Length: 240
Image 1 (cartoon, rainbow, N blue to C red):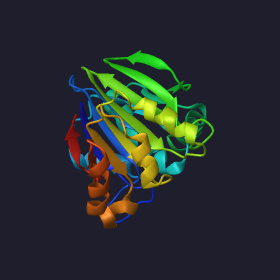
Image 2 (image 1 turned 180 degrees about the horizontal axis):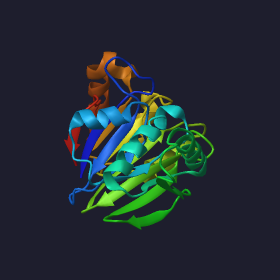
Image 3 (image 1 turned 60 degrees about the vertical axis):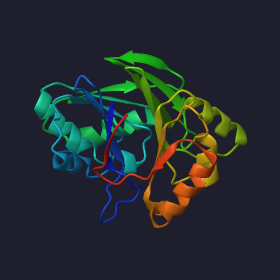
Image 4 (image 1 turned 120 degrees about the vertical axis):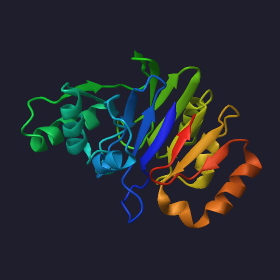
């Protein structure tokens, strides 16, 4: 599998787009996790072959994760001439359906919408998908994708209101190869607690508020954990 970070900020900056990540599999198929504003342009800038991309996963309904949907769906629909699959929790799917209805007015029914519940395990194409709650909104959802013996976990936005929630989230990465954590609502101690699994090889930390102290964060993290901590930039890519 391969990660391409298209957007690594919650609020766009001059150098960072709203959040979106492309996960590619060995058979050249790919999925998009979240679709913030400007994702269509980010995909085009990468020059990546998009013929294998026909599926989008949404972690929750907030616009920094969904505002790019109309442009991306329109582009992919014209590329594939088939409906684009959009997975997510009910609130995100409701927003996606309405957003595309309002702004993609010249294509009749361009997407298929699939509502996911927490703690589901599904076989989709060549990967296994596991869902879990992330406690940010009423039904915000994280995802673990497993393919060819490796797993990557996407948390999306996470908020911790009770210590028991940390324990549950830690369990979600107990067998993951790497994870992507949006830390806009977390402090670094919570990130460390969630990512303490010895199986984790790499932790990708978003978004940008830690840019100014990246070296200090990495040093502190490496003292306690074997995982490599990476603060990715837009357009960075990593083989898993």
